[in-house]
Image (tube, rainbow, N blue to C red):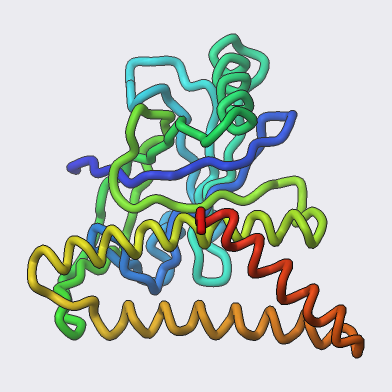
Length: 242
């Protein structure tokens, strides 16, 4: 079974070495032109599948942790567990915490997988590979991740509303960058962004409009409404460098 790779951008890790990464939104089409059938990651076991954590995809190295890959609500997650009782686990944990706390995170992660079953479908102007059985081999820190990057969640809970806003803005920053890259690639090839992708972007805007309206409606004070709108706008602009 051929091994392929997709990236995971780890943004948070707790003191005990636990993290939660989002591998894929099953119904979405990623940058590699892949999408997933429900059960693609849980076909082995309803509770998910376990895979070792290895340095740089080195299958000869001792694992420094393990990850449980599972599905929930149409999303595939990797529950990360670093083994802090061994030197490698401690060192990778220290490096990751340092990377996250110092400037723009540079450390990237990737997971290797084999495909048990897949089919190709034509969806609009895109030829899409639908993965029906994904066998995750390992999860690794790498110099440069392959494939479509993914977001990471904290296992310590959602945190405060301000922290959630910061996380959401960070993800929007990443989304804007990727959308720009894809748009440039399509422009270079003389192609327009597909209707499906434009519809997804419109849905993102709709959700943000709903969020802003909800925040503003929380107070009858027009000054408070203006402050809420101003806060969200300025925060987004800071993260997007505008």
